[in-house]
Amino acid sequence: FPVTIESSGKSTVLSYEAIRFKQLHPEGELRIGDLHFDEDESSWLPGMPPGEQLEKYVANKPDKILAHFRRAYALLKDRVDRGDRKGHPFKLICDEFIATCARWSEKEREEVLQAIQLSQYEGRKYGVNITLGLHSLKKDQSGIDSSVLANMDLLFLGNALADPNLKLPSDFDAKLLVNRQQALQMTLKKSQGFACVVRKLGDAPQVQVIPFIDLSRYQYQVSPESKDWYQEIKDWYFSQDPAPSDDEVAVKWHKLTGKTLNPSGLKVLMEHLTGINDTET
Image (tube, rainbow, N blue to C red; front, side, top):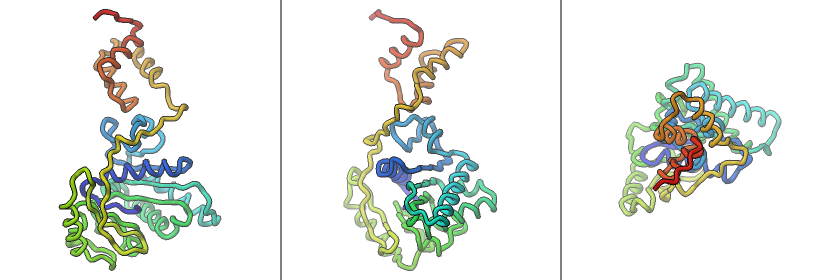
């Protein structure tokens, strides 16, 4: 969805969209803007170490996120100019869009809005898609004009549609949709998912159920070209003075790989690092 309006479940839905894009288009270009990316808690592509996510896909600084939007605009404009509709798919997902906008200059925001506008009018034909995660569609916060909004797919989660000051496309009967959404939500258990309002471009808004998404079921397969994490932690271990403790090694391993070592795993790793084969019970 080119626009996702936030309440509960936004981050999970956006993460699933990133995973699904890589599943459907392994050759495609994925770019993610996440101002609040945390190496210990965030995971756009489960199974991929946080460091590799930052290296390959995720930008967590305003200037780097801006570069992703510039990339989207330049790529799409080039494809439009050349009439190229066969290029590899490109997707940019920007979470916390409004908070990110607040960190750009007025000129930079204009660049970004230009990229969003072009993507809504031409992106579908040329394989360039932008998804935004926001808390509000109010123009004074997002900067998105209503004419651009009318050309977007929209997904409203939680109580996002209930805001009486929200300016919506003309095909929205917000009160009716909110009532239907709330009535449907009351029939659902958490494990069954949650009710939302969806408007695909060209279709009328509908109340639908997004199934419960368990991101732990999706494990990104790290390519053989990925880093040798054991060698990296070994290099780090022997560069420290004094030698790191077991707990420090466990923390470093988690930061490198995104995975938590259980006691037996930590013991084996320490034996390899120190050259000790402890056979005592």
